[in-house]
Image (cartoon, rainbow, N blue to C red; front, side):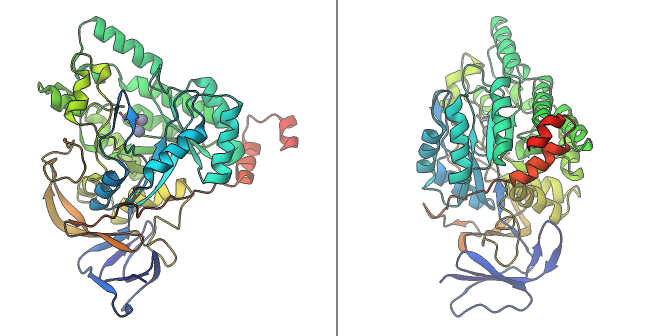
Length: 482
Ligand code: URQ
Ligand code: ZN
Ligand code: ZN
């Protein structure tokens, strides 16, 4: 039985930090305390001067996603391996059924793809169409497969866009099941119209991408999704919140007692829209993702949201496309596959820009890179905490180590790095996944297929029913039947 003893470090959880050793046996943490001894043959990690934190959870990735006529460059092995090199030990990826494709069929396909993962993984399932079979499959996914979150793309008209009818039906079903709806909040109709107008005006390069998706396009959708969630009496998780307007909408809703959660991408915290003005097509196109990188003024709203607790998690939306793939949109920006990388850099970028700047304490860093995602998606305290009984998913963090981030040294299979040239201080020294040392001071030992599918139980439907009862908008007659 494998045994790892991490000695001499400062253990940091979301709620406190303390000097303690950590003993892992098999795939679990078995003891946290002072002067621990490992079994004979235990692997000992000297964590003196380092922080010992819960492994990062990235709640938003798209490994080997078939999208816009191509497939993302990182598959479930290379993408999770890259994540381990950056201190991330779990991902929540997305099953995205084509319209009219049975959800269970798509789910089985993604499950097959993910078997090669090097670290633990789970899935949000997208609802891209609606009929009674979708209603039934959502039930099977929750009750039999451990899915407790359903995604709705409000963008991508004529592809995977969910309109209001789909969202109302799906949100209502999620409430019955104790699942949480999540949304990509951009108004797909507005995007489509703005794209056509830009093309008609002869503006076809990557510089048009942000012009077709201004903050108002995101804010409208975020507010609409919040309204639908409120009317349906269900919580809501908004992915990749990128602008002040959306962050403010979430804060206002939360101030009224609504359970709205917001996610922020590492890229949106430090990269701004000037990247689209680069005359080099490959560089500008490499940054085409949605929502686009914004004017730097929006970044302080996102940091304020994370610091104040009105925004909750950080992610990457890791969906890498190489230059040859991005070139599909060389004459028409709407054909540039949307997506960027980041799964490897998220933790270091947020530590450097967040903790080193004084915006975040180490515990707040753990909250937004691991613990909150575990709580919101109902896998806490199995994950997101250093405690006896938790999975041995751990990152030993060297706060003094420095590195200049670059595509030339990344493990990701992408050929571009949106953080290119950024020097960060604070890096993983060791990453342990399910009790195995997968990354050790630059040496990546990720094992294909070592990752496990993580079942996520639904939230108590009683909780949701109670919440429904508390909703002002539940007619008395309905209440009696609850
Ligand atoms: O929209 C998403 O989250 C997927 C399709 C990745 N691409 C992106 O531009 N964000
Ligand atoms: Zn999205
Ligand atoms: Zn995404």
